[in-house]
Length: 372
Length: 157
Image (cartoon, rainbow over the protein chains, first blue to last red):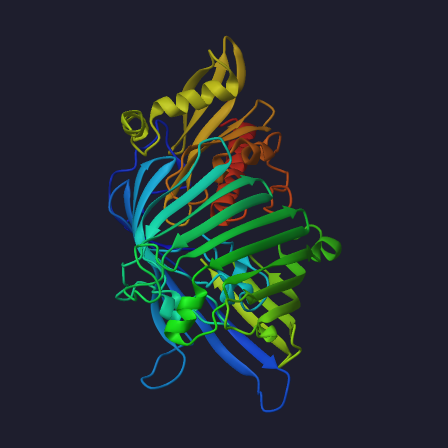
């Protein structure tokens, strides 16, 4: 259970007339984390165990309308000067002002509302020990930038939206293998030379959620050789996703298309082989095996199969020869055991393939994760 | 622009559940003209809803914690202790507001305290609203059990 500070009077059943919540301040602590074991095939690749993430969620309500929400993350257990890996970072930190049921104004370090995992990334919410490769190389999870915007749920209608104006990506970080990932600025002395727009509209029913997301913004920063103006060397992203749950069955699918129309100028300026189009998606199906063995249980034992296909050089500008090993096909087969809805024990086996047939491997992973 | 601003000001009401919201909820669930009297059991207030001489049911208001804010909800039962409906009176968080949608709430209708109410089984979840779905389902289950126990013991009648 979440720790509540300064909120002791709240009980499950309140008296009538409704005891109005005093505009008193309160602080809420939550968090999530995950530990991974990964064992790749091939010589000289010993298994690795890693405390991949330990994240503290801290929220504070200043009054009934104004709240701070934040996530502070430690990756790979520790950071040490001069050593590879490890990160201490703010994943999100923003102020929300609840204007009405259907609109909350937000400003700070926010998550672009693109795809499924970027916003909802707590380990018990997805199958597989690690996040899908697609959510690393195409949608650069966890993607966060600084800006302002509005979020809300339309009353009665089933629609929810989020829209932000944030700082842009930086062209000098774009790459052949990881697309726009290295272009993220993540709230660290970020250049605001290229404002970007991002948003999402989604529709929900019990067991169904369908969403569409976009990002549009320049990346040139101050390099006139790459582009000029606020939207110089634009990155245009469109994505669609769907989630369906019915009894023991669960399905999810995501597709994304990213257009980097000035990839040629970016490559010329920074000596890269950035694709002019980055595209792909995945489809995942899962079945709760406890439905067969223990139908009365509220626990879950989900067997799942996911197939990802994506290419960070789906199209290339003049001067770049397509590297077919970047056209990846990842098949993941595994199980997720959830004794409670917010804890998960995971195991999976991945077949990492690509169109060139180069450097292909398999990966066995085990993991535990929680959120509260 | 002016219209949008006026709409904003109109809807920017207090976030706590005003009694008017409770009254509207009772009228919606039990029909216009339903009369609600407050009964006290221990320290909790329960609404006894009636029309003329006939008992229509009972209702109570509760709060559960979402990700970081309380969710204020109302549970109503009929005289045979079946759940009539759930209403979300106040939802304060920027995510998960889908629990207020009628298609989600109506899954609880007709349930009794002896029925199983599991998320993902009897109660379908909503992706991206997982915390709120679990919190409200747990709150409804507890309140349904409590109202039923009070009704059957004669503490409310």
